Image (cartoon, rainbow, N blue to C red; front, side):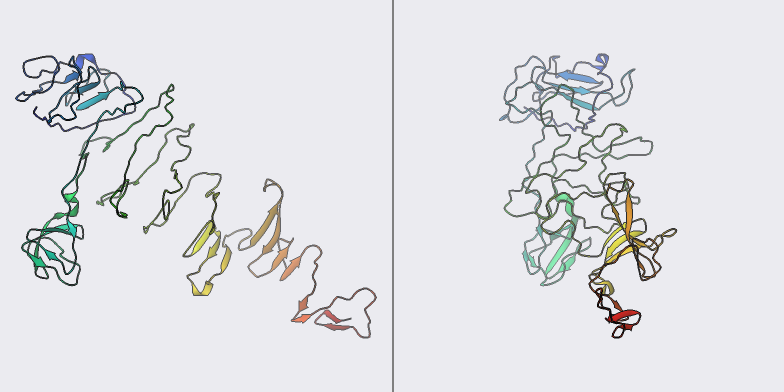
Length: 437
């Protein structure tokens, strides 16, 4: 059989607004027949209008070991529909240049897939440049995300960063390299979707994957999109990514690299927007940030709590290698271990303006601050501390009875004289306090 190659462009949506109009379909003619059949060697496929191909009367057979070719088979198991490039029919709000419709037929012991692309890459590798290394003539090497070819057998330099730039005659050691292409050009892709939005285009998507679970479904697990990656190479690959999202820098920024959105104002879409599961999921961290953004995590939503640390932490709930600051409006708690003047010092800060400006409050409550709370301790900008007094007038202003085992005034320690032990003749008063009974 002769292999017929087709380039597929898919438009997948959660549901079709209207069924495909039967009047839009015309039979496909292979060669001289009108019955759907395999495309045989020498057949010519000519399509002048939109057409529909459905599984015909041929008996399904295993083509796993066939020598190639394209076919439509399965007695109604698959349907391929072509639409006109332009045109609109009443009630028809969606058009696809090619649509593959799939309905499962087998039982629970067989996996069925609407579209499968199997790819096996055995070429494309180029070794990374290395100093003091022999290269053969026409050998291609990789350096700084570019590919270079050696003009003849040579030895690279003993030091340096290797060939750079573009063009030919790039000398390194005894080598003369020529720029070939950017490194990404040697990549192999199982599938590629490329969409360019030109002037006049409306809303556009590079790819859409939609999943709908109907009320009667009880399969137990469903995934809108699954990405699997297995590393059996024998070495850890720290540059490998299961999901790699990159925004190629242009003249203007993109709103978000990844956006989770729910248009409903009454129903939640997720129990957890992002979930990490598995005791051995990650060695270092579940979320790693190595950027220079203003904020590592920015939240301006409405929540019961900003951060809920309910796990088991052998080393503590929060670890900060640099300065740590917890703020609310103009108030906060700071720790600046990197500053020699504040080394290992906690600072509780109130830099607000207005009533109570600059005061620090230690507040207590016995009803979750619903209505009953007390300013247990207050410290103001003058260094005055009030215990039970929100407006201290002295260095220590206490409302209530103070109990102490000893006290000092001006560096002189006072004494407590039990009843009946005070002798006016021997009593000594220093700086206003009794120092001897």
